[in-house]
Length: 316
Image 1 (tube, helix red, strand yellow):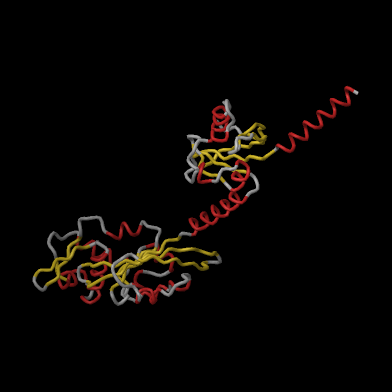
Image 2 (cartoon, one colour):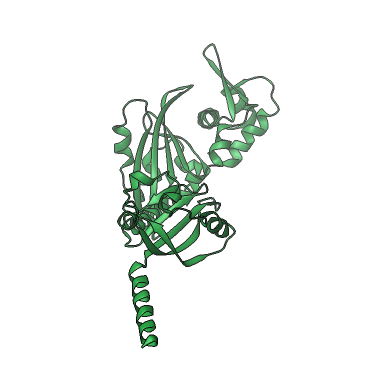
């Protein structure tokens, strides 16, 4: 299906106010009825022309609505629509560019002509043969494309369109960036979870949303007891600096190795070194703060012992 032929058909139909048969259109624009029928089927399927069945005759008129292919062609996803014999009825521009083929090379051909199996780790034809029911089916695929490892989500769905008993739509989404981000988040989550340091994250309302294993060991609270609770649960009685510290961080100040005391679940106080920074969401907006707590009780005791010894030496 060449752009020139399509443009010729559209240009002619723009001058017509009533639906015309294939014979009438063929006679005026000089394209054989067999070829024209194939073109009009594709154009009808993509929404460029409307089909009217008057008795046994099929007549066509340029549609006044936004063609469906206009919406499909602005999508970066690969979109392919097949008849029930797996022949291609429609492909969008992203698919043509990705598979490096022209529309004329694929319309009316079986799905195999796109060679999707070369980069997807699934056999498309086998999936289609085993596709039962009308529910959406999702498949995860991965493979190399131009020396890059890619991840895809393949979606199958069924539908019915005039003149076709049934159709199958294939949508292939490149989810590589999403998958890499998920892997990175899992990696970072593992680091946070199993860090020896206590790591606590707060939302903007100073409620605890992350409480790792190090926090459980340091403060004695299991995560399920503190998630969603205010951070004041570990503050000593009369402690009033939390708001000022939070405000300083929210203004962009980095708090490093701030020394203070915190309260454990059993009520005992411990000396800690605190470092706090902002946490940003995927949109780039600040969603809260994260803090690393280190137990410096041993160091503080040592400093007191040294100070005591110095004092004794001075006295003696």
